[in-house]
Image (cartoon, rainbow, N blue to C red):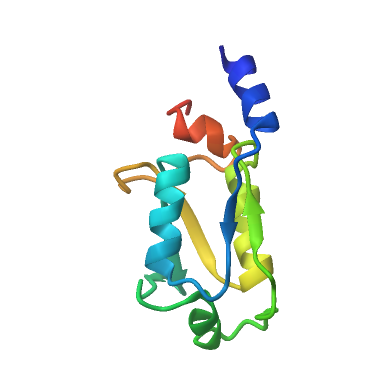
Length: 120
């Protein structure tokens, strides 16, 4: 069943799109809806204010980023670690993908689809 699910994740047309003008709480809610997983944003080692947009959070970090980035797209076939790196490289923010209840981080070496199905 795992191989079939991985193939479905690869060919699934559904994508999760992130735009820099969205509030963090909206992005997190959309991610939960799309993948049944939590997305936690950090500024340093502290959780970021969910009322900020990605652009506003960028202004509060010391990292130089492309704030004109159009956004990024994530699919179920994307590895968790790669998705987290995309947020860093596109927006200069640290994110952690967590279980639905938000109590633990999912492993970086599995796909988001596998994490959504609890295959870890």
